[in-house]
Amino acid sequence: MCPTATARTASRVLPFGVPQLHVGTDICHVARVYAILKKARPASPLSSSISSPSSSPPPTQTTASRFIRRVLTPSEVDALGSPRTPPSPSPSQASTTMSAHTAVALLARGASVSDLVSETAETAETSVETSPLWRAAQYLASRFAAKEAAIKAHPHLPGLTLQDVRIARRPASQQTGGISRTGDAIATGDDVVRRRNANSGPPLAYVRVYSLETDDGIVEQEARISISHDGEYATAVCLGVEHPL
Image 1 (cartoon, rainbow, N blue to C red):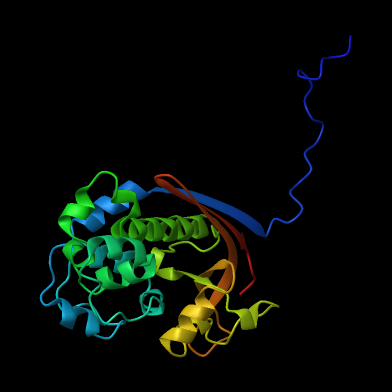
Image 2: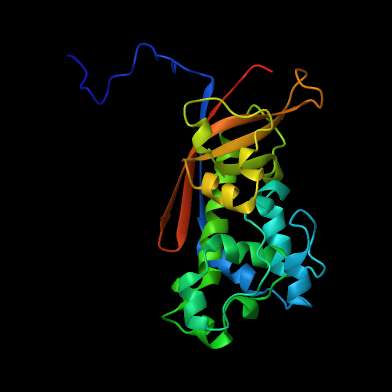
């Protein structure tokens, strides 16, 4: 009697055709990131905090700024731009006009929650998910998930941390293939060009690896990622490749 299909065992297993490819995925709860950012204590003064060089720590550290600089690399913080004036004093206007990039940039430089939007507007139940702080939390949650996914997609590179992974959009000039020698074209040029280029292509992960082929021994490996949001969650998937160094 022939065994049924469910009872049969395979006589052999066909190996995965491209063993150099690895997949990683991660999910991050936006509300948890929001709660961390909400703890931001006032920086004094705001004007000096946000006018300092973007690559330097803010004069007064806050819970939010420390968290942001733990998740984002210095070049990622720099690529957010350099806002030098506080947002509009109108809470309703700030809630509708301030981008996630601006909110994260302000918080990274030591701004407090009250610097982004008034306490009344921020605590209103109907306005939380439209507030600049929530948009900043979504942005950071997606970056956190993308970096964790990238780390999982590179099991052949042990010891990777969030600071070893950079998430950036490929500039239009690089859409047809290849990356710049610096691997950081988004962080070059003035803020206007930088932000225009930063929104020109799909997000990519650049994983820092060490190689004997460069003078400083450091190169970046490009990886493909996909980021998605659904309610209070941000998810990311990364496709990494194992390159011989």
